[in-house]
Length: 213
Image (tube, rainbow, N blue to C red; front, side, top):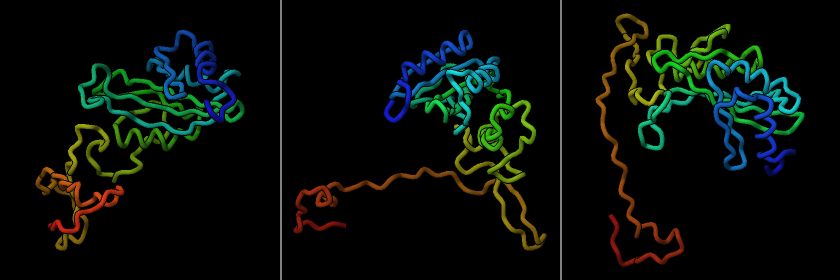
């Protein structure tokens, strides 16, 4: 891996030895290492990755939710919701991606890793807000991007583009009120790009005698 102290294959081996049977799946792609662990082993695996001398992932760079209800425009066979975590070892100059699937699609639940990395706080709140993933043990799991009265989780793939509710100022009540969405769903058709009109931008001559609308 360019710019890193260890090759991805070597990092894969270090992680495999550190986690042992906790590894469900591991791959090296595009010079990046991704390890998948089971939900019941998620917290234990993350503590090992933080503490083990050959891993030493002392910094959590990012944590986000994923909705796999469809993937690459095809239905997904397997658990719907996952959490993906990006870790960095400053001391060993190495990075790792960890993925864990929530065992229940109806009520996605995972343990919080805030006791391992304090920086997890707002990341887990964001995943809860946008995907509805609950992190057990989080001390202050509240919405962080949407409003207090927001309904649903807007990054789920079945969430409507216009949402469920809208807000407006009511002059009679002299306050902001919530009401069902009044926007009529519509399909947005992209404009047709006329290739000949932009031919000159790619170095080809433009026919000046042609009339463009």
